Length: 221
Image (cartoon, rainbow, N blue to C red):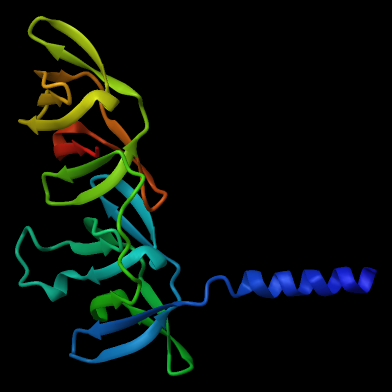
């Protein structure tokens, strides 16, 4: 009995070790080389206005490093696209990327890479509450972690549930003017009282975003 138990435990251990077997990809180098490989780096750390995000490699479609652009002030950040079609920009903090290339492991420094094209299949986003577009062009799907928010209008403070909203548009900076469109046809303008809005993303990440970074929030119906 004990021998059978040990054997089952051994099989389970092997299964656990094989859960992350690498992600098929092509790594394009700055010198023009293209390396078909398996990415062994499990997470990519991205720092941007939203904080530090750890994006799993099995949910990524493409990473384009700044050297892949005609660099301008706007295009000096790394661009990351997920399998859901989301876009994030920021600084990848992984100093090197580990890949399996023709049977051997290689560690390639981030600064030598132009882009990484992952072989992960596109995934249609579902079970999300809203599409959020930021002013810098970033876009993601997610669920708001609060049930509603308060808005300061010219005639008083109104508390509104997100489930009744159709769209929120943000304008200005500081005390950002927000326009809320309700599914019943109502429209309100004012300042959202929350210092930030918190979202749970399809990638499993939780983030908090200050209103003056947001262009609009469109609620799914």
